[in-house]
Structures are given as C-alpha cells and as structure tokens.
Length: 84
Image 1 (cartoon, rainbow, N blue to C red):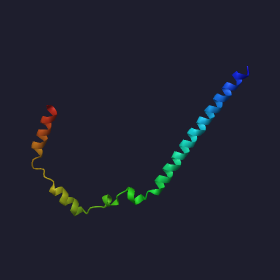
Image 2: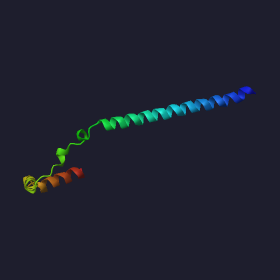
Image 3: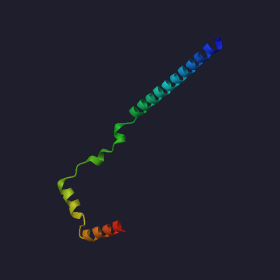
Image 4: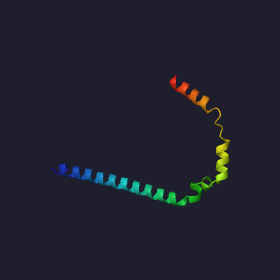
C-alpha cells in the first residue's frame, strides 16, 4: 500500500522541478533580453539622416525630374502582361 502513496508524491515533485526549471529559463531569458536591449545605443538603431526634411524646392526638382512622357505606353504594356 505504501508504494501507491509514494508514486504520486514523486510525480508531484518531478512536476514541481520541471515548473521551477521552466520559470527559471523564462526569467533568465527575460533578463538577458532586457540587458541586451538596454546595451544597444538608441542612435545606432535608427538612422536619423533619413528623417531630414527636404526643402520645397528640392521636392519640386525631384517631381519635375520624373519622366511621364511614356506613361501611356508603359500602362498599356502592364495591362498586356496582366491579361496574358
């Protein structure tokens, strides 16, 4: 009779050990992520030169440089490719 009572106690201990291991792994992973996240300088993650504002004249020059002469023929070619 005593063997039946000891078996569930061992299973409960094994489950408890596995839960403790899982919790420790999750906590260590979270600590590593927080440490790693804080160790990266913020300026190295984002390139702020992309966000420089262009002047209106620079934007107008870019828009005027776009060639729209052959736009109709290009659209016709796209429609042909789609319909194939």
